[in-house]
Image 1 (cartoon, rainbow, N blue to C red):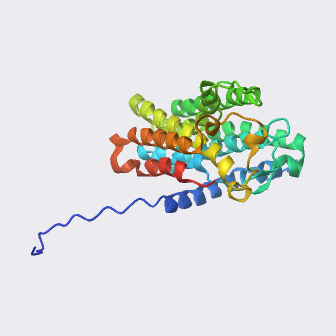
Image 2: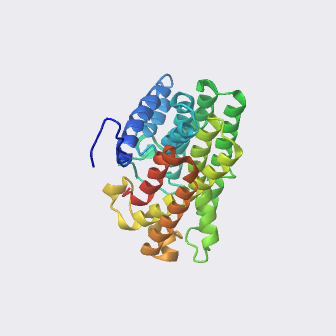
Image 3: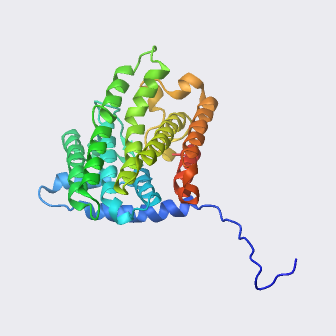
Length: 308
């Protein structure tokens, strides 16, 4: 082949670098979270809120919000307050989940849990403070988004975290501990509400901020529900196969609490297969978006490949 000035060679498409993408957004989310809560009087409660909020983590929920908003033509500035609020709500759920009355854990993200540092009373209030502040933060800090769209985000997040979502899932989870007759249907209910609901809210919030059409909302909702359930299946597997150092929290808690898990129904290998099928279904929902959906595609793959 003779190359001339008019010859156009198609360049091979470089694979999407998810690690770099996540690292870049983690830095921005961390900075925004750091600026979101100032320590004022009474200092103890603000310190307790910041202790858990700034304890690290994958920041997956904020990044899902930002990536979805960007996919549909929105900007990071539009979505960052909601992204921070999602992490505040998620952190609240972890603080409360670790309490002695709930999962009773001593470690989270490799550090002592909030109640081990500040006591149960302050830990409960720190979770309450983060939950309330999350909604205030969306309402007061969101810029250049029509008020109607911001209201939809607030309503969606409220539903995801309340009795119709996370709280409802947690109640059924607690009722199911130690029981041998828990069905797969009940297990799916628990995790569609306890885990998938907030992941779905993260994706849908980003879409709502960008002014998504109904067809987009439906596609992205199915994507999020699938990755949410896959996320929990992988969590259940890791609780058995990973070490405390890898997880950053106590390993083997599900077995100790006599919880029904996906591996208890399917075994480890089939659980992994089921998670992979969900991820493939999730990615299929993104086919219409082409290369713009690369971040969300890669995040779906990351969910089954992660080690903590």
